[in-house]
Length: 194
Image 1: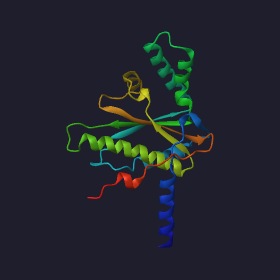
Image 2: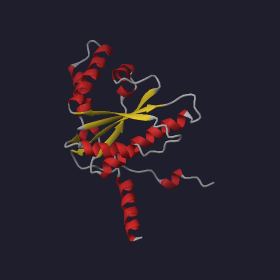
Image 3: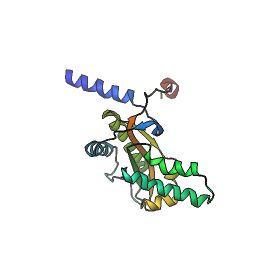
Image 4: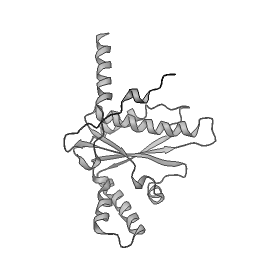
């Protein structure tokens, strides 16, 4: 019973201390291959009505992050042939901000009994589990989308099907500076009792 109380206290402490760290303020070392496997296994423990696994992962590590930057810079050039060098540098370095980036791809199956909304929510729960697992392993993580999650050219470059969307890019690394907590909502102001 005591061990269970300690585990409960530890789990609650983890949940109550989790916070995002800016992708712009991350450094290495990043998660090892073993760490990433654990993080993704935790992600896959998300609620999943119908056992569909309506999501998948794309990992960006090492040189893959720079290759993604080339794709993003090319998109910027296509949008504006006179794009400035600053914007191109931002796009080239976007995925280099953290040692590892995980794209969580939501892959909804249409025409089945499981509502599409529930499948999309499952992908969001996967993202949350990845954030929590990263935090538990001592990393900082940031779940963001930015323009590239919605751009059809980026989706094509990543091999996404028409039924797939990017639920988020999760940047994982170490905080380059101490994290500060942000003001949290007043829970009582958000609760209605029926």
